[in-house]
Length: 157
Image (cartoon, rainbow, N blue to C red; front, top):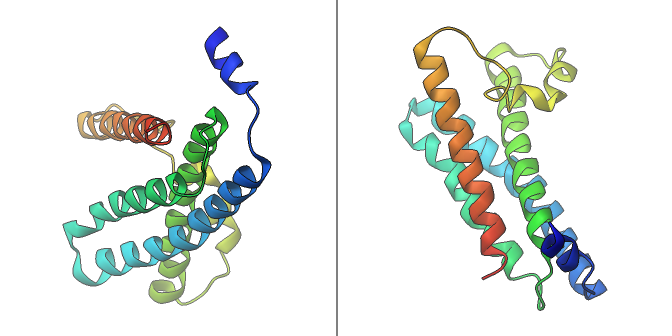
């Protein structure tokens, strides 16, 4: 904990931080929305297992994009990278739900219901006594922990 606080107190270049935040916000919102639309398209029109790889495409894009946006490393970049990754996952789910409402049902009257981020991370808090649900929730949790850890470590490269 002392090392973490020590690294957090280190000085950082303000222009690097501003560029990193702008790249992260734009990458997570815009590219997350694009990948959410692609995920919707693959899932609905092709019923394809390829939609599983949309998260990995997003992860690869955001990690490389954020890594190239700063010159001198600071631990704050790693923390913000995880936040931007999760924001992009939220955008992917939100855009997929908006497309679902518009294309499948035809109206967006229930749009406000889908703004809740707990819907897109429900594997953390929604459990049942079904073995399949428990197994897949644990797989999702382990996958998200692993992905968040690797993006945290990739900022240090």
